[in-house]
Length: 241
Image 1 (cartoon, one colour):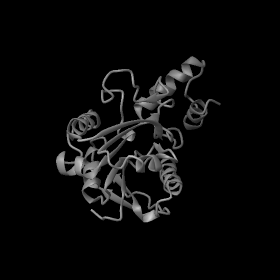
Image 2 (tube, helix red, strand yellow):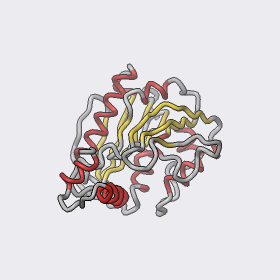
Image 3 (cartoon, helix red, strand yellow):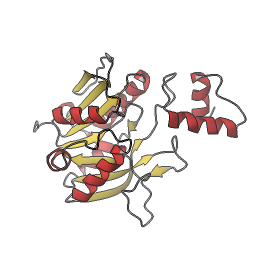
Image 4 (cartoon, one colour):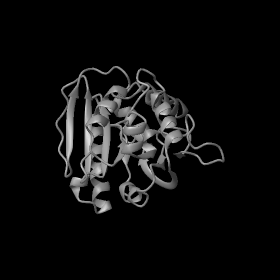
């Protein structure tokens, strides 16, 4: 761990969403600028899944690493990126998501907490405006939380919980979050929105996930059209045009 690095941002990428990934990087730049932190206090680690990925540049330290094929929803890549990360705090940002401008500033206000759980905007992905929903039940339950909601201490994730475990399982993200929640010595839940889920879902043609395509199919049916027009039509539907 480098004492000068406060936040390590972990981003696995298939390489099929270059425009969405660039948007994710820009969102980190905005968050760094808004926080007032020196750029060197934030690092972004991008792990490409089995391809020679695009080399990106940013106003803060960033590494783009080509890994052998993972074929495991990015689980193995997240673990490898965690092992080379240097920050005191860990943030997970997929290549089609974004951080909100105030996210790092908000996290700085709660640096003593081992696990910070913030809201994320999910209106582009689910039939709810945000998660987690605070309804009296456990905040950390399946379907109610995503790694994008979290800012975690390095000691919790790597030293006590062994990093990103449960590889080979589709539910690895939830199982890891459950482990972290159970073993965290301090948890803070905040109402501020810290990220946007699926923010870049329609920017790159042919790169929609099955879940994203199913949702757009449903939206198209509700409007009485089909997605025969491909990426441009999907983008129009996603944008509400």
